[in-house]
Image 1 (cartoon, rainbow, N blue to C red):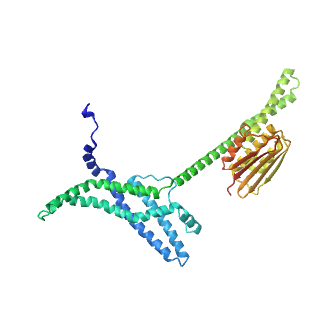
Image 2: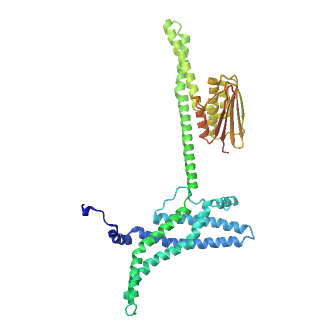
Length: 419
């Protein structure tokens, strides 16, 4: 066995680690963290205590406790921001986005919301703990750095006093305290950092809530981007390809009507080209309406669905009860749900009649599409029902379908509408 290649024995590395600890930046940052924490914690604790005492002393009135509570919440926010900055500067603590203290107003409802927020009480508890504990931690660290060297010098300082053995005992203890000073300092700072992360940071529930909020915002931006892209494609097709196809169909119609002396093959070719152009134009118009109908953008849901009902092969009874327009993305989802549902009625249900009812009540847009067909509609059957459910969920709505064999089939959806 090659002894030179063996890993060093841990105790052999202890002297080097002890020496390095004195010059380590983390040691001196930890000491500065404790000292500044003592100053900030003491000042903050005194202010909080005075405000609490003022509020309690003024309970006989209404205005003074409210002012004291508002001031306390303002101080809490300022202290929280300062403490987080201190922990970030000296300990490198990273705080999740969205955890900063919210602006405080003196409106009773806003104050009540902050009082009910558990985060407010966690932050206040940290400031109260820091008011007493930070000063003690700083004094302990400073004592380790000052009394240790003084104890080491005990034999020199105590020459002629007759306590030689005790002096050397103090010297040994001083050496231990001096060597331990960097570790005591870093340990106290780490303990304060742990307490700050627990009380000034976020709980698991709050972190999950922020994650849900971020995901919802990301989803909304994705839906908005997709809707904007559909409108752009619809506009480009309407202004470009659709206009050219219309011109082509008109020219072929003119040629078909005027060129009557052509051979039979030529006349038939022009007639077939004319019919094909008209069919392509019809298909393109249906595609454009399916992307994002212009009438929905200009005139709203009632007019857009009236056009859908008029084009349906199955007679549709439409009722729209809305006293205002709703958000554009909600209108788009409602339009596509009704349009796709009526397409399924015409293709798969064998129904003779259909009914569409839309109402806006209590901030919710209620959709109901019913038919008297054979029933048995299955969202997993490839008829687009799962896509409808996904569209509804994209705006935090609910989707239900009832379709027993023999009918009727009823599709219901509720879409949230922000006033």
